[in-house]
Amino acid sequence: MPDEDLRPRFTSASDPLAAEHEAVIRWVSDALEAQRGRQYWLDVDLKTLESGRTLLEAKPEQARRFVLAALAQAQFFSDRKAEVRATASSDIERANMHRNSAWARLSAVQRPTVSVISALIRRSIPFERDDFALLLSWCIGAGAYEHVPGGFVVKALQRYTAGATIDGELQSLAAKYAETLVAHGISRTSAGEPNSSNSLMGLRRESMG
Image 1 (cartoon, rainbow, N blue to C red):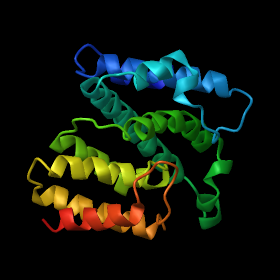
Image 2 (cartoon, rainbow, N blue to C red; image 1 turned 45 degrees about the vertical axis):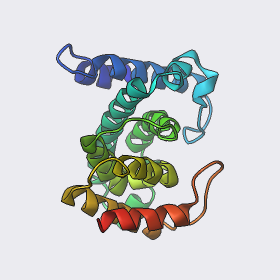
Image 3 (cartoon, rainbow, N blue to C red; image 1 turned 60 degrees about the horizontal axis):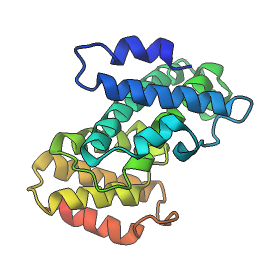
Image 4 (spheres, helix red, strand yellow; image 1 turned 180 degrees about the vertical axis):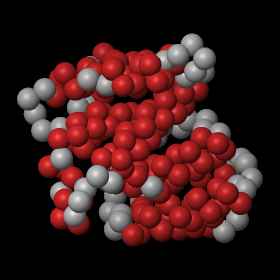
């Protein structure tokens, strides 16, 4: 259960997203319980649990805060998994981290956390400049392997740039994200996802200013 590691870290009164962290942790706990006895990489649909529906039914600004909370928690797990990976003693071991019990436990908790990002990124949410810096940085790094729908990330960035100037840092992050999508062979489109080819072209245009 994620409660032991995350609640002290993310739900202090001084954290402006404490309530959102609590809501995400509650969903993850419920999802893990619903997943008990199944393979950890199988997803639990947010719609199937009350705690997940709470996240899905949030109004745009509240949804934005849920995404930021989930992103912070996902980054935490990515960092922890990197620490576990660093203990591998060979290339073969590093290529088979799913066999490492510590890595698998972290992945089991991270997956429903990332599901929050993947579900809410599909909506029209008023993300801010710093939100995209955090999101793109994670998606370029550890998050590149977490199956966040790239077409919707790009569409969200394009909505933002339609009404705001994109600065040098975001231009660089957008270009790197486009490269990441290409490097990972993301040329197909999942159900309901914006056309990835068009999205990539738009992202490259944004990255060029």
